[in-house]
Image (spheres, rainbow, N blue to C red):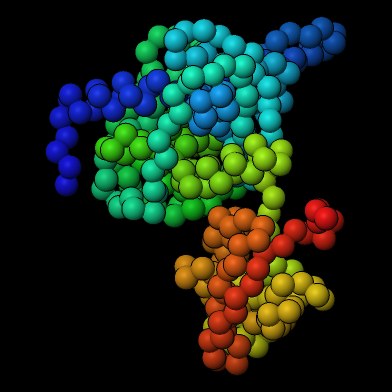
Length: 316
């Protein structure tokens, strides 16, 4: 285990703090007499390129008519939204600046429960030094839902995460970003969650290149398998994703996946429900090859498919 001391923590905060910004969004609310008044929201963001691209949570900037960014040097710059993905709660902003200090990406797959992490933020509402909280990785692959959103495969930590550092980085003891803090779940008092950094990086690269996250298409419709559904369809297992429809000509159709198959693994990751399946699927890009294991008549069959654009979004 890495030795932890105050100087080490301070050095990490100083280094990473140069890559953390405050993000403020302003939207207009109308009263009963239709008089507009501004409402401000605050969060944090992560500098991901030297030329001014910034990643943050989608919910931090959603509905904002004007976006401002508090830079590490204290300057406040106006930002434009490059794109966002509500399903992943990730957005990318752009400010007119250069020679910035981008974060160093870490590998969240190397995290283990018990590892020490830091949650860092810089809120427009609290100018000055960044805000830092320390904790451990409490759990991995967490799925959470609220009336607003459902997020899968998150990192859970006891480092305090609040609206001020939502959108900021979760950092390991190498000073590398392993996640993006998200404070979208209002009931999560004393429990913090972060989106794994590999997913943030993939989504940000897609948004910068295409203005959106291009989701790959397999061409199946599936449902979470439970005992009731298993009995109804006469399936002998009760965990996984039951394939109820395969689109003609789709990657799944060409590979040989059939209706009634039960998907139990994707990319070597065992899944038990539709949420876990989608969480893993969203890690891949259009053009990636994906291995899928299914159970058919009690036998495990392996298929390799290449993700394509959904038909209505196909790019020629």
